[in-house]
Structures are given as structure tokens and as C-alpha cells.
Amino acid sequence: SSTAISAKLKDTFKILVATDIHLGYLEKDPVRGNDTFVTFDEILRHAQQKEVDFILLGGDLFHENKPSRKTLHTCVELLRKYCMGDHPVQFEILSDQSVNFGFSKFPWVNYQDGNLNISIPVFSIHGNHDDPTGADALCALDILSSAGLLNHFGRSSSVEKIDISPILLHKGSTKIALYGLGSIPDERLYRMFVNKQVTMLRPKEDEDNWFNLFVIHQNR
Image (cartoon, rainbow, N blue to C red):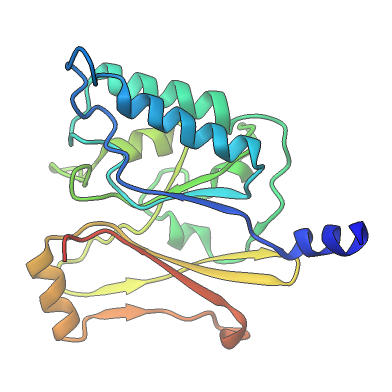
């Protein structure tokens, strides 16, 4: 019945997963220059048409660590076009957002910001092409995050030990613990796993009732 379908939708997360979009790849090529932008437009359009709860990106949104002005500008245009609006977000975040988004000056999810109107939240880790660099350890995702267009998670500052604290998502009777780990040099992460220095933190309450989802971006 339609009532049963409606009740099921209230408990069902609809997530669009995309990864390795590499915005800006071959952007100066006369034939293929717009390919990555067309692809990203298509991804976001699908998300809007299917009315997904959120978009989950697995890293390498950008091809270059310092994307060109055109690439960054097009990315901002598309996120604003498809992800802002009045469509209500149907899920809650139960975890401590100051931990989940602690690297940001605005450590909360964008759709709960009173100054922003977000219809489709985007959560993304960084990849090896768009990883944080420099003295401030910033990447292009941090610009999008500060602008309120995207939620950058899965950052780790330590080179010795990693504690991955999940974003706890709740919709109806469904609970998701979303773990993220942005790209780290493979040898370093390997050593940390071998030395048991990578810890996945579990929810304090009903720890067995959560569906665990881990987003990671490594070569091996």
C-alpha cells in the first residue's frame, strides 16, 4: 500500500555515492575540456531528481591540488545550482559535530546553519589529488566547506595515531555511523595499521544497531 511505502521511505536513507570526479582534468583540451564539468552536472542533477538524502563523495573531486579559477568557479556554480534550496532535509546528526568537523571554523553540518538554505547536503573526504597541503594544511574542499556548499570530513592531523570518530546519522528507525578517512601516504597509513594505531570509535549507545559505512581513499 502507499501508506506502507511512505512509512518505509521515512526509514530509508537514499544516498548518491560518487568518487574520483577529477574536476579540471584536461580542461584545456579543445575536445574533452568540459567533460568533468558535464559529468559533475549530471551527478548533481540525478541527486536532485531522485531526491536523495545526501551525496557522498569518496575523494579526488578535483584533479589538481590547486584547481584553476575556472574549475573552482564551475564547481561552486554547480553546487549552488543543485544543492541549495527549500527542499527539507529528512535526517538528523546525533554525533558531536565539533569533533566531526573540528578542522572548520564552522564546525557543524551546512544544512543546520541558520544562514544557509541547503536542500542536498554533500559529504566528502579528500583524495590524494586534492589533499591538504602547506603550512595551513588547506585544500580546495576547505574553501567549499567555508562557503557552506559542502561538508569536508575524515581529516586526520596526526602522523602517529588516528582515531576515526563517525558522523552519526539518524532517519526514522535507521541509524548510520559514517566513518571517513581522507587520503594519507600509503606507506604511512600501512605502518599505522600494522602498529594498531588506527582506531574506529563506536557509538556509546546501541552500538550494535548502527549500520557502519567507511569512506576511504588510498591507492592500496
